[in-house]
Length: 584
Image (cartoon, rainbow, N blue to C red; front, side, top):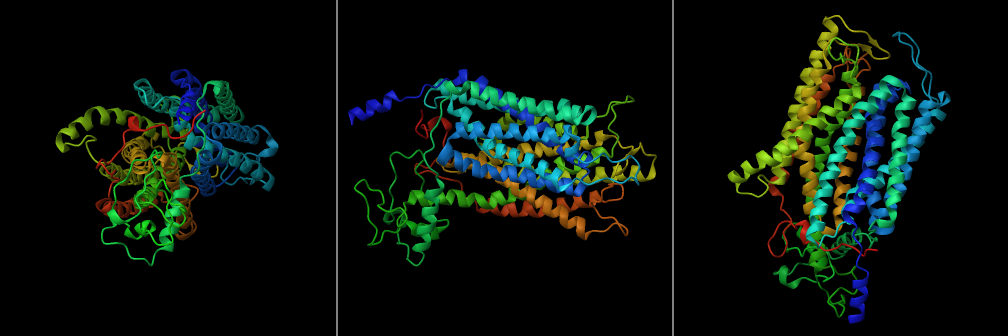
């Protein structure tokens, strides 16, 4: 045993911490600069360069975003089970670069996109050919692979570079998270202003070529630091343990639970587990049958089950319950994200048919750049909430976090309803001015530009940003704390999967409204020309959906039981965690 212990000591990883950060943060910054501006302006690109209708472009973007987010589950699985985070990030970064390169070619090579539409309303627009769409979709496919690997792994990989068992390492992790979100915000701001401006007002080939070059820099910076990275080896998927508990519970569904299950069920806990030992709970009691010991079950000398597909421990069962319990709240999040989806899609179309000039000059704010106000409000609100509001709430509620995570998420959902109501009122105002007052020109394939200033769109985006600060950031922390420790990479994927399902739901909702509603004889609520449509009615519909969702969320919150460890604590501090996997 002594020799083994010496061997383990020699393999203590050489944490470079801060020395590795320029490479990790540099990779992250260039990657976000390369992809965020492009994705936010892709709606305009599809409408103007590929001559797609608003409905087709919006649905394609929703499906693309949904697939990117849903793919993170597969990326996290590959990372934790087979590849490790370093290889996953490397493959994903190269894939993102290739996707951006192919996308740039669709703009630079005239044969890869249809000819430009005429300005006149009666002009004929040529649709893209199957070959052109195939080339476009291949770019999207490569970007999906890149996003699926980068999103669930980049934060965790950066944290891997610090020793969680030292004070300096723990401080380094906190500093890394701060720098990560700072660079993320910086990259988004830059993308939504400078890069989007070049794309919309200079040249699409140059505007896409810049982020492609930045994505190449991201790959180069990442691989330059390869020699100093701490690379965590995969140890197998925690989903196997969950599957075992579900399968065994089904096999033993006809057995009766003992009168005192907490003392008579199989209660083995591995001394090598990084998870906290969870307390027995009566919720979802049918799962407890997986821990019933029968005459056919064999137990090893160390106390573990000989066949985990026939007998599971209470710990395994409680870990499954942790995941199952958050699913109802996750579903509420899916419906909530529909509001954010509208802020990224139809607000762009509203901006296109609004007065985007600054003052009396000729400079126009790019339609996609209005999303920056949502990010600005979120960025400004977070320190105000953290430094001013939370301390006041602590004095009132006597809770460390001020209010519970579920209460925080609920406030964001209320603000989401307000966002849609304000959006509907602003759209009604924009449309009324377009119909009753002189317009400022004509947008090809859409309609007249309303004299309403684009600044009217800022309040709804600002409220949406504050709503996101409450609900989305609350969900990030909620999933992180409620999932078992060895599933925290999946916790991040769980959030992205919610985004994915919301994108699909939003696309489905738009398609249904487009086909079933009518305005006059030929138009509908979401017609190509917003002046002939009733987008405000659609916003009211989404607001009603959010009211129902809020009621559902309140019911879920009332019956939710937070994860509790055997010693009675509800959360595990990061500094108490041990290294999660073998490290080289």
